[in-house]
Image 1: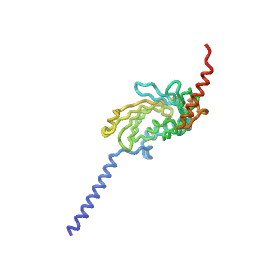
Image 2: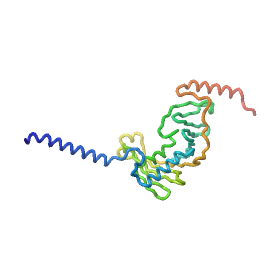
Image 3: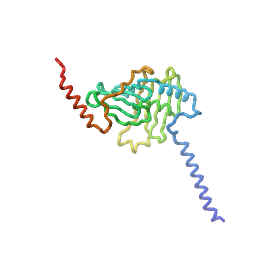
Image 4: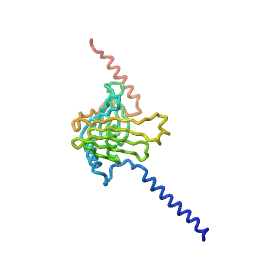
Length: 242
């Protein structure tokens, strides 16, 4: 009888150990990227409402700036358009899942590229979506201290969001990388970093200028080159007067 009982005792012990390991792992793991649940605090629900109000605006201009760099403005127009101008004579337009980049012909032709993203046109909703996904939110007046950790805990994002008139008008984000990420981040010398985001001209931003002529699908760069040659020939034949 004792010999027969030994295997079952071992099985039972292994089962108990497995259950304990699962419970311990779940208790230590961060929550998955998701919106606050129904049992969230009033601060999280208030921040969620302000974030959604900003995302559902007819338009806004988001200005992102890292330390030591020039600000980068992006204009958003509902429901699926955005435009940015990283250089004075170079603009980028996103419509839904497509991005339009001008050729070398001073915007006479555009290259259409498929760029799917889950964060709106040009990824303009990314920082607002981090607020929607924060697992911990604490309110201090008009400011909300939010924290988001992905399911695979390689980074923690701390956000200080400012809310005015029931809309998010600013975010200050800090990305903090954990000790367990050295094995794959070390070759890239990745360090903690942060930036600020401001939402301005809500519901009053200028309309996005949609490219309508000279649009060339991705991969057909020869057409773009021919368009540039045609534009250059026309420009050369009509020199400016002195």
